[in-house]
Amino acid sequence: KVAPDFFSFMEATSKLLDSDPSLFAVSAFNDNGHLVKDPTRLLRSDFFPGLGWMMTRNLWKTEFESKWPDGFWDDWIREPDQRKKRQVVRPEVSRTYHFGRKGGA
Image (cartoon, rainbow, N blue to C red; front, side):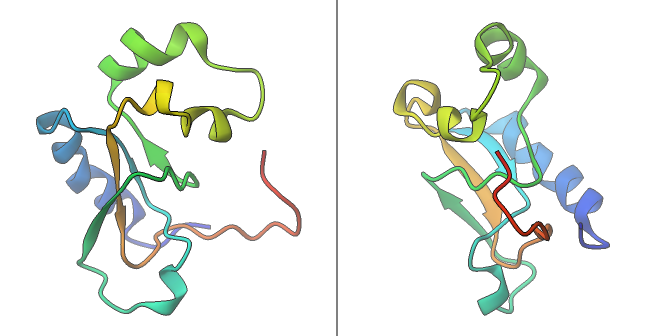
């Protein structure tokens, strides 16, 4: 499930990815998003939360496409060799919700 403002959130934050090389992704998910209240606040994180995310096409083409794993990509992308000290922007209030009963990978 995604929030009504999911796509506008992604569009607005895409500008951050385009302009800041210290970022490698924007995620619409916050593990603690159900405990907070400010829908306008953005946070930087060293942890990749997944669940509704994007990276630039250039980053995908130059670094990730040729070596993308067949499984457990979410664990793989969190590895230091993939992150390269870059961070993720995520919202304080989550824009996605995991509604499965079991894990996602």
